[in-house]
Length: 221
Image 1 (cartoon, rainbow, N blue to C red):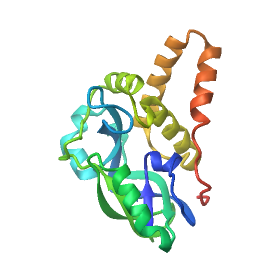
Image 2: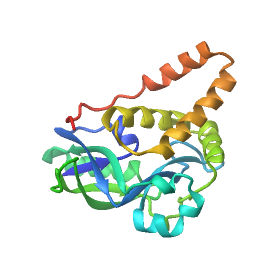
Image 3: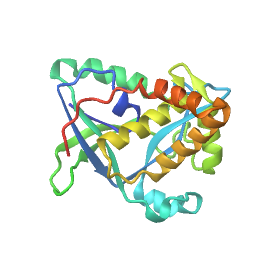
Image 4: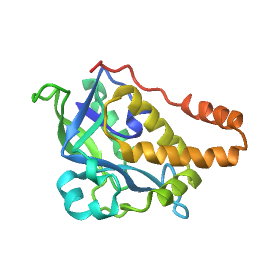
């Protein structure tokens, strides 16, 4: 079984795998448009995590509400993991619980540059569709950034999720077009610096967060 991760599974897979490949799926857009009341927020104060929106739906429904729509492509970078046969049932049960808050499984091919042949066929991908009950949808970036900065849940601070995701994406996919992620990162860092009181305090805070990120050993692109 192959699993494709595009969010926290990039930097915190917490599962046993025997191979991994950096790659991308086609036809989807990654956005912080999924509410998180079970990991990075609470019912009273939901956080936000990423989900995937089909590119065609994104183009017809959401471009008026998304400032990065003009240069958005339909490629989403991430990491594919090969799960050992002996661990498939255990891993699937773990993932179904981890991604229970509005996510469903789809099967998508994973590609690498300069080839139209998938490096992985029909990888499992957990996606929160736009009709799921936890879909938060678009909002002004300043509003999303403040929500991410302020939210905290059982799995930790929402800002840790964003900052580790942005850091890991630069590592595994430095050519990826993820301006939505990186601008949110910049806005959250501005809030952190404001409240830290000094550049030194901010740098220490950031280093303690990023140190929690443990990207897998991935195949070079």
